[in-house]
Image 1 (cartoon, rainbow, N blue to C red):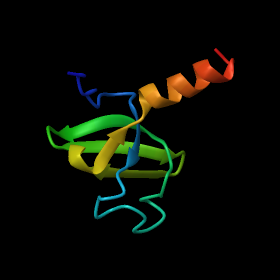
Image 2 (tube, rainbow, N blue to C red):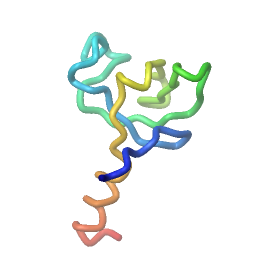
Image 3 (cartoon, rainbow, N blue to C red):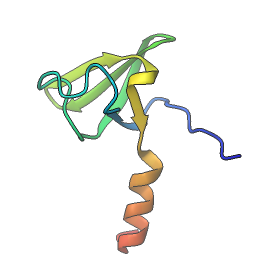
Image 4 (tube, rainbow, N blue to C red):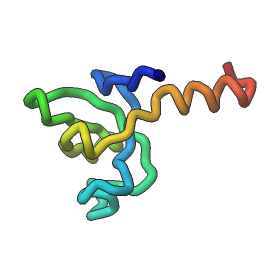
Length: 79
């Protein structure tokens, strides 16, 4: 069984399409990768989408894409 990756500080994430926040407004961007920069509580994850755009979410609203991006970079020959 494959272990599910934990979201932690520095994780690269995007909003899950099934999340109620998906595409709701510019602070909840569709198919955009953001960086987890802090936790307010054990269920509140703060994400930076751009230098001027941040928001907070529950863990269930986010998908960790860190390993997917690394795999893409390795496959492209960049790494």
